[in-house]
Length: 287
Image (cartoon, rainbow, N blue to C red; front, top):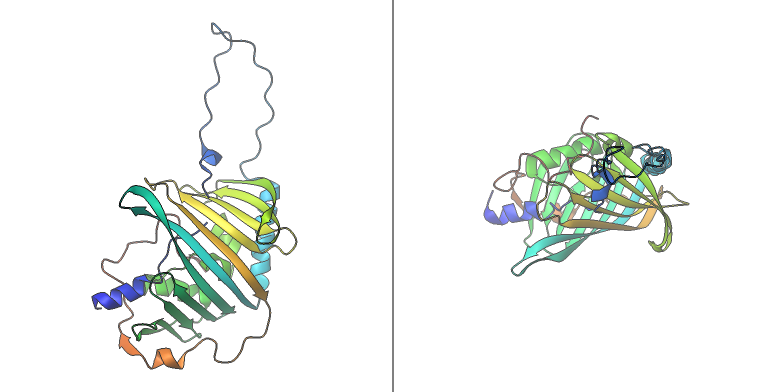
């Protein structure tokens, strides 16, 4: 694959956007030894709350069930991610993706920028990654389900989308795998033009905060920080324009212009990462 083609493949690889919650899994301080000089008798402490609060789990499961039940889905995902500047403090870059999905085997992602524009089409048999400005397209045979196609796109060409967990068959499975902490924060009326429930949850390598519609159970925002990232950069994704179970026009999941473009191999940039960015393993690990 040429360097230009490599740049094309990378143009659709962005960091998972979901908020720093470092205190979520911070280790508690050791209490003073009873009777030690300078200490006072300790009052009985309240019962330690569960690591996985039932209310938080209930909200996450309800949102996941709403997404999993949708036969068709479209939304806009605006991802903001930090990157180092020449002065040291990070700069923020943004991409927007228009996403359309039809279960069990069709996805379209149109990403106009910032950065190189890209388009991705999957129709149940073939997947195409298209760079409209360069008129280059990578085409490959694809597995028969969305989950497997997303995995194949990452393994074969390092293509990964931060909103993948919203369109897989079982969104809650990806959250629950390795979940160590989840708790309910409260409600917000300042995100997504509606009332949202805020939930924080953590795995060993990522700390996440999500805003989920209190009435419709649809995600509106997610923020994340990766614990092993020395820069502690933040990633955010805002999701809007939700449409569930609406008819999808014929021809949505293919493109004559993309099919006619100059072919390049459906292959990863160099070097190919051994795995996705920390905390962003491809969805549907064991479908």
